[in-house]
Image (cartoon, chains in turn orange, yellow):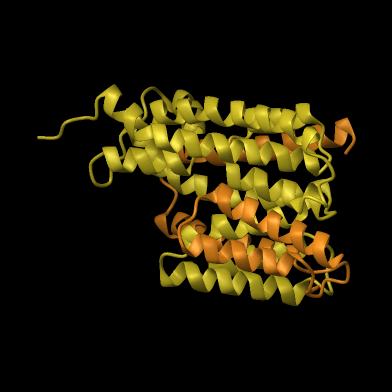
Length: 103
Length: 219
């Protein structure tokens, strides 16, 4: 990625994150009904990101080495394995399947 | 009588979290460089954003071929929860509103959780938030730097399965959040809507749909 584009990514995300963290201190009287709902965002978005990562260029689920990689990571996460163990295991599964079966 | 945690207690409780944050930062650095971001921008992102899952999401979008705008959008949406934590910690922070809004930048999931543990019900401990947040900030940036330097040494990202590391990482971030019924239905709803929209809409729209579903199903 070109430097200016990377800088735009960093500054865009940084400024929005700054505003969100500052909002609570600047506007402490936001109704709880609004803020309580933000708790639903993280699980919905992370699940959507998993799903999107498994789709091909046409937007449909594409079965390749990422699917078993995600399943292994999910099992490890359910067993309360640390984050890095899940990530490395997922990558290893994909790398091994590619190396052995040339997928 | 309520006893505030001593500095020693805070640091002892934060130490294992700091190790985890360092490793998380290093893995973020490796993957971000593998997604072809310049190393300086990867470190700068950790310096300025300081939010693991949001940074991870933004890089994941880039690695999957998405645009910069979609990446910013995905990361920013994940950070919307900081509005709620910001309101919770604001009364515990020192100074006027401007100073408090600056100090609130040290709130991440881990430092917020520690401040809740150290505080009284309904009033997180401000000092624990600031000490833990500052420690984790240094560790996060340093971890990212190490990862960004290490990344290019590792070799071809695809041969190493690093493209599969993103969905694996998202699953690992998601799983501990699935504690309540609400969270589970938000996750299922978000994934379902994203998959339904993906074949027909440009990148970013499926994530926006998932965000709407998350807000809608949250309570």
